[in-house]
Amino acid sequence: MTTVIAFIVIFGALVFFHELGHFIFAKRAGILCREFAIGMGPKVFSHKKGETTYTIRLLPIGGFVRMAGEDPEMVEIKPGHRIGILFDKDQKVNKIILNNKEKFPNCRIVEVEYADIEKDLIIKGYPDDEEESLQVFPIQQTAVIVENGVESQIAPLDRQFASKTLWQRFLAIFAGPMMNFVLAFVVFVLIALLQGVPTNEAKLGEITPDGAAMSAGLKKGDVIQSISGSEITSWSDVVEIIRKNPNQKLDFSIIRGGKEKEIQVTPQEKVVEGKKIGLIGVYSPVEKSPIQAITTGAKETYFWTKQIFVMLGKLVTGQFSINALSGPVGIYVSTDEVAKSGIFYLMKWAGILSINLGIMNLLPIPALDGGRLMFFAVEAVRGKPVDRQKEGMVHFIGFALLMLLMLVVTWNDIQRFFLK
Image (tube, rainbow, N blue to C red; front, side, top):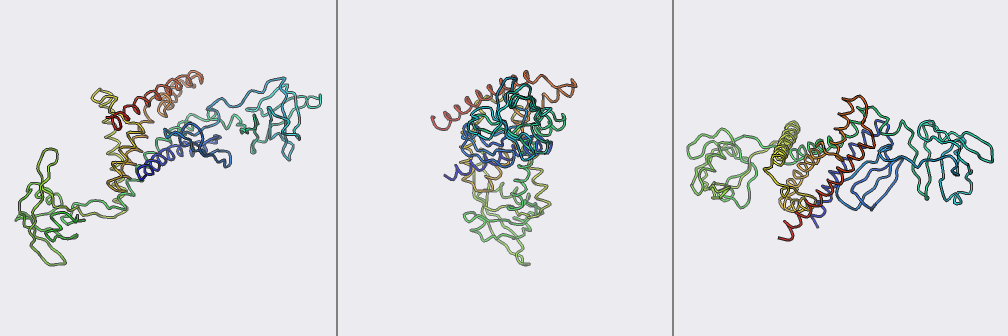
């Protein structure tokens, strides 16, 4: 149950902050955001606030922000259609009822001659056999189309994604992966603030209860002057001497409370990567400094970003096969292993996954954010956008191939972890 909770929290946070990036920059550009969803598939939870419906969906394989203009907008209202109209207090149209008009006894029935609910916001028709032009709604307010009892807010052209500048659209898409890097940075900073940043002082940090240091009488805060006659100036010196002397008695000359003491310690032997090393069960000293924490957060973010790109390079060059990839099942199993090591390791794992999600989404693959950005680059070079139908087809094919890859990777994970 702990692993399940940890997986849900980590997955939810990664997807939430990713989609939050899209959402914030889309709203800043004035784009109508119809839905903010975590997960895919059938809705489990739904709540509408303002213009946006916030949903949690069944399948934990991503999320999305549904922006006006990204999908086919509204059903086309053609000449000859009979529609119902409801007005606001200023006698401006605020509801257009397409069917089941009998459920709205106060609506005005209009036979449409002409309708433009995106640009001109006008409906021309024949209420009571007299032609009349009706303004759909003032720009600063909202109006909806009602079909099968479901209301969908009308998005004027200036509130649709495609009407925005190339830079605004770029930011709305790029902000998702960007937020994953920001989240990872914040997580690494929090770890450094809570756990402290290791320093290179020749001073003992936390001491494990089952190690040789505790048995010999060493204490946290002891300053090491020398070990078996070798002068010590840094923590690196301490680690080097201990590791080189497994099962060998070492004489520690320390300063504790202003007084010098001599303590004999025998490092325990441990085999690491086929090599025997000595350990005494002591951690390096740490410093809890906001500045150090921010610096460490930046270094950790850079390090793991670089490592993931290295791994991607090996995958592209064939040094790794598709079997090395992991999907939700593999991530769940890895989360289970990491959770056993404690909250800080789990936080670090979340930060690494966040960077991984950000990088994967920036790859120039159709249906991913990177694929969208690639089309924006083509638009910048050509001076005009790619035909929307052609772009949509490319993204559809890309999405289908990604789902196929997801199925293959998930099946490999199931075989690897549960059917072996």
